[in-house]
Image (tube, rainbow, N blue to C red; front, side):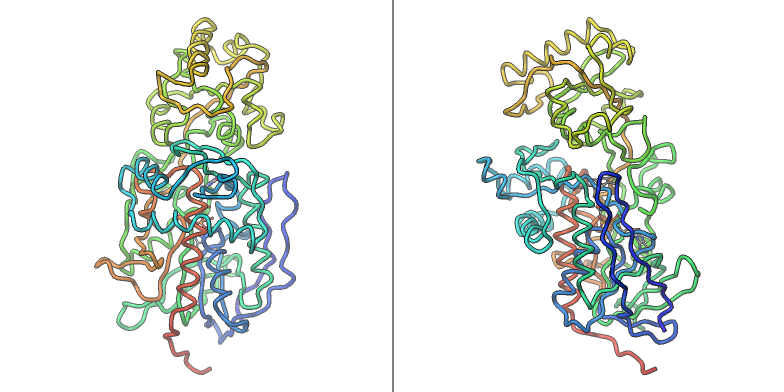
Length: 503
Ligand SMILES: Cc1cc2nc3c(=O)[nH]c(=O)nc-3n(C[C@H](O)[C@H](O)[C@H](O)COP(=O)(O)OP(=O)(O)OC[C@H]3O[C@@H](n4cnc5c(N)ncnc54)[C@H](O)[C@@H]3O)c2cc1C
């Protein structure tokens, strides 16, 4: 019998979301022989990349095939489920309705600029070209709904970001889980941690994985006839590993990620000869607050309202110091360079655009003030200097040009003048790891000679090279779903290559 105890998945639902669906039962899809299980495809990780790989693999294989998703946590979804539900897309219906002109080339240009040309163009192009198909797939196959309005995130030169109704990755993970639930050929194994790859005798083909049951501690070999998809996410929460790649990001720097965002699958892939790419490229999020743990609430406020409709100020000078819609690297580094938290300020009009509209729910991280003087008193700022800062900014809004920092103003931008005014302290946290395993357009993991390692595919944050030096907001969801689907399809369609010994 299978040594796994299959558990009902429980999503990390935030309080505002409906309870997640439960699997009716998790049938024993795996044919097991003692501590050895045989399947067609094993997927490591149950975030966007892993779930989309499993769904796609399932659609390519017959009902009696066996696709196993192994997840070390007791819950599904990794970082994906707590993501802000934002996805970049070129040519979406929402963009067309708003008459926004966009193109694959323009999005490539934006991403290459942010990524300081370290992005691998063939992967980038493939991802962007797939964006509209990916969004349609989420709408038509998974029933995901997006808000009507596209937003313009930092570093994107036009509005192209779609947001799910609750601005939450849970809006995407939940239907994906339901889709998995409806497949007879997919099984999800929670509390099951990947340990190492099983290789063929020559050591050049992945034939399976060793996993450990987190509760009982027993180990199992999973032989995979067609392939393994590594979809284990990034390593932002892996302080020892990340601080070797970039010593600035030691234990003193907080992270927005779930604690399981660690590097063990990546390390094992390196051990079998996979090519690493840009591992030191680690992103800080500029919209996080030191006044709360993890990702928190500040980003929902700053992304929708504070940055596009407000200003970021150094409380010591009461002056602006950065383009509020610049890329994440520019904004994070300029805050870090100051050596103390910045303050983001927006008025009542701008605050209406918060991705979480219930502003009371965002307190005390986001604080309302009846006047700018009151706000200055709270943050220890000069009311006279701030009044001048706001006046200069408002003059720019009136002329449509931000002379000082080149912030792109939106069509519906208004001067900062209507009480209450909102303030939130900002200090960057480690958010995303751009580097990882080098893949090709088929999501095959490449070896040190640049050739595919047979039987091994990777997608999502564990793969690298797509975002280059810095990732633009809303591009990771797209990356995970686009390459997750490719990886699942390619693994499922690979010719079965291992002969399973008889019991
Ligand atoms: C708070 C937050 C908000 C974000 N918002 C956005 C956004 O709005 N738009 C956007 O584009 N990007 C966003 N990002 C980035 C994006 O969400 C992530 O890059 C993406 O979710 C990664 O998906 P994934 O499937 O690669 O990994 P994950 O979703 O992290 O899933 C990986 C899974 O693998 C499991 N795993 C790891 N190691 C093992 C092992 N040894 N054995 C078994 N399982 C293992 C993990 O437990 C995890 O569940 C956000 C990130 C965070 C942290």
